[in-house]
Length: 559
Image 1 (cartoon, rainbow, N blue to C red):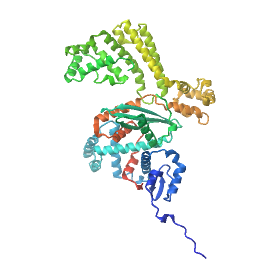
Image 2: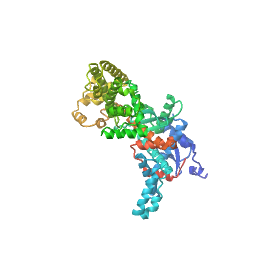
Image 3: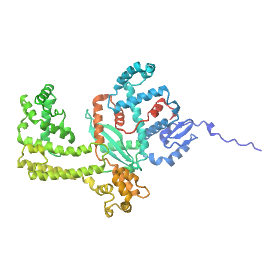
Image 4: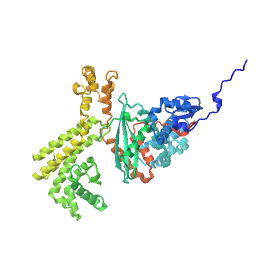
């Protein structure tokens, strides 16, 4: 009888893990097995065919369009995510881990409160003084805190990476998302480009986070920006088919703003003049605030309106001061120019009303739609009133008793402004019926509603319990409570509407933060470091400090 053939022992063949499989198939070696970085499945045999088959059947559709650079970044991010999940919890409470975690949390707090990265050293000095008196036995532990500027910089980069990993996990549950894109220049006149994402899940949980920030130099084309946005979406795993899209010197008072800026320059940017002007205000016990040191020509409407109003309130003292200093500002004595200034003050104050309501987070597209419609009607109303010489709602203009020619010209300017806003609201026309349906589902016309929701609307409007719930709950709570099996299309329409950005608040706040950081650090702050600071400053995601500490320790994972 022949001797039995021994089974080949795969483990003894000496197969080695090939490092290129990490970027090619998104696998890593963990304790002698190939682990999928995407789904966590394990493959015992290190064989290209086995890994390729797993990737092709389960993940290729999602990642097949990645560029080489995007694939490399994605594999690095997935690998870091795996590292945070390894079973090293038993070491989490060692003194070294506690010190590392404390250093991370202090660095995080410094950024969240918009303090300088160098403040970590000051914080450590304070902690050392406390330890010296209250916890002398812990002095060595406090001494080991890593809070130098380089250490704080490394910490915020690690924290930002952890936040991005958590965001990658969140986007997997997005049913739909929208993007807010904006461009501005920093203090060095370098163009900066921001992208934020707002996504919604099946249970109507909304996430709004920074996608990326880039500096653009030289000539940057739309294709260049599109490529950068696409790369960021790929890195986060956001699919284009879930993107919900809405495509998005009016007054002619530049001659007013230029003069105001000239006067501000005389008073505020010349030290002795400014002190003397403040003294003049105190002498007459003026209660008005000092005029701002800003370039009004580059201000947005909210700041412009405030600046012009302060200038108007101080116009008598400003005229007196300029005359005393020998500054020739003939416009301050020109009745026509003063009337134009008064008109600009009143209209920018009107604009402030709508801008102030949009200068907050969590503004939805239906909010801006309602505000914009009201503003357009107000412009038409004021134009008609000025044409009839009625000055009830323009108090500054009323002070200067403008001529009929002035009022006719101002009326025409408001009409032109009205027409421009109507043109800019064209994008809303295709959305108006849908906005109305989502805002008032119980009173909207079923016959004019989209065909896929007509039957659902009838069921909805006949349900008394849902009617009561609608009047007592927020839109998010109401639509999340609708049963998927009964109202799938109504829920989908609501999701698409509720994720549209209703204002540029998020981008503008982030640009303001970006400029303050650029001013604070100058060229010493790299783009990656600035991106990390902005991500931490704007995120609502709580960093997993324990996971970051574990990742810093370095796990037994090769790639």
